[in-house]
Image 1 (cartoon, helix red, strand yellow):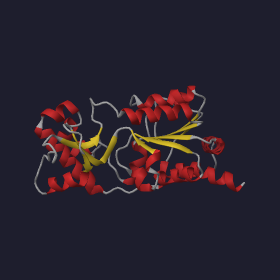
Image 2: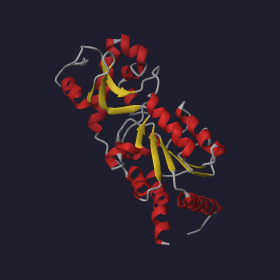
Image 3: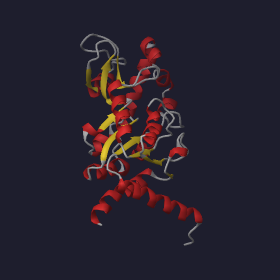
Image 4: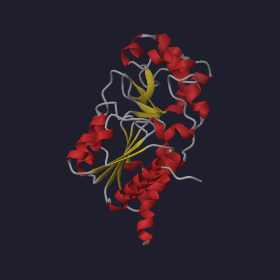
Length: 266
């Protein structure tokens, strides 16, 4: 098989990235939708996307519309049922981060995803920050009551198209951040602190275009951290990366994270 210059360059980049992982002691991982693609989670706007199949749910992704439009809320809960029927499982990309945790190198996982797959893969709850919330809970917009979302979804399955809070009768939504809502202050503060303290920032499966969380990339770089970006397609901060990798996250991330184990065997 012929080896091209492109293959050689790619292999060199992988080796440089593995070297950065070996040298690091405080790794901050930022994950986006790309890490969960291989778990079968559809996108929103593609041909089989959640919003494509259920247009009203896109409108409900804006908090002002969610509060005022009953039809949009019904579409939102219908989408939530569709998402549950997929029953995604963690893929090798999620599980790869356990290697960093076992080696004591993992400072924090900051995820833009709401699927809970990092925790299902076995990552410690205290090391995962969900800056956009999670679909595993429901939240009352009036009293703030949090519950397992299964309870609300069961009511939807039984014909209650728009479940209300059992505590106060207020509007219920999944505990995710909709457009027009602020990110959880505590989650954002932990992410920003980790950006200042890490010695390596590993960005996985994100275009790094959604703020304010994308701002931790230049913040980490300014604080002296190395930056590895692994993503299919360009990102907004490719110019800040010490190493930029493109390819299958499920294949490449385990190889990078195993570098920590390889170090201990040397």
